[in-house]
Image 1 (cartoon, rainbow, N blue to C red):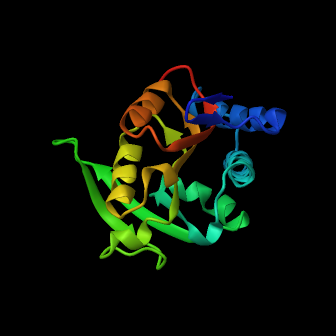
Image 2: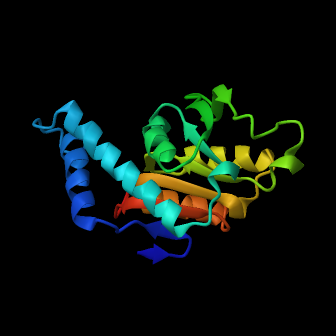
Length: 190
């Protein structure tokens, strides 16, 4: 399914549906019966399928692509990205200040491929922001702004999520109409 700049991965639909059932069964219903290893395997299958789809449908050069992974949730995509040839990872630790509701950065590690003192050198780079959930879009908004401040062009940014909500998609695309979003599953509501 493609809607504007949103692409929902439908490859191996039966396999993905089973994996999503494992995750939803455990997280959304709170019912027991899913072991941590089953949850991890389902997550591995979903992130692997999403990254395989990105490699096959996007024009990305792994040697010129940075994977921004918001800590800690974004780390779930690390293995899948590596298996698909990506090796430049941007680690970003951020949290929301409960009083001001502003984002505060507590950790940042950029790959040597990027520079902070010369944003023009980063204009040719592509970036993937990998975060399992795109709910309200606030975390993604901050990550996109950070990449743009570093010189990466909006059209070269792709957001990748396991699950998205319409509110988050609308929020992101209203602010950044030139980026792409690839998700494994798109929910009906937040």
